[in-house]
Amino acid sequence: MATKETSQQKIKKRNTTRIYLIIASCVFGVLVLPSLPMIMMSAMLFDSPGSEDSSSTILFAISLITYPIVTFIGIVTAWVLFTKKKYLFSIIFASLPILNILIGIIAIIYIAVFCGGNLDC
Image (cartoon, rainbow, N blue to C red):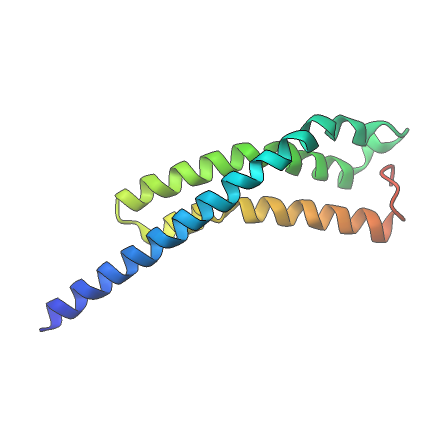
């Protein structure tokens, strides 16, 4: 009886992880498309004098440029880990693009609040 419950728990955990991976793959994969024009325009962040030395501007540009790479690596690694039955690690790797998005948002907020919206802070 205990093995049947354990087996059902494993199946439920696998199905829950699979649903999360499918949703994360779709959402983050679709978000790569609007990031591509932003990546092309990211060089414009460094137009104003002094902006090339601003750590917040550099951090924002790096978060923009690396988003598709992090998304691809995170999703592929998550699915590989899922096939190896490492469900927690697969969820963590599938969630890596969230970290990238948060870093970009924090950089934008820092620029807006502490630099008055100027990229040369």
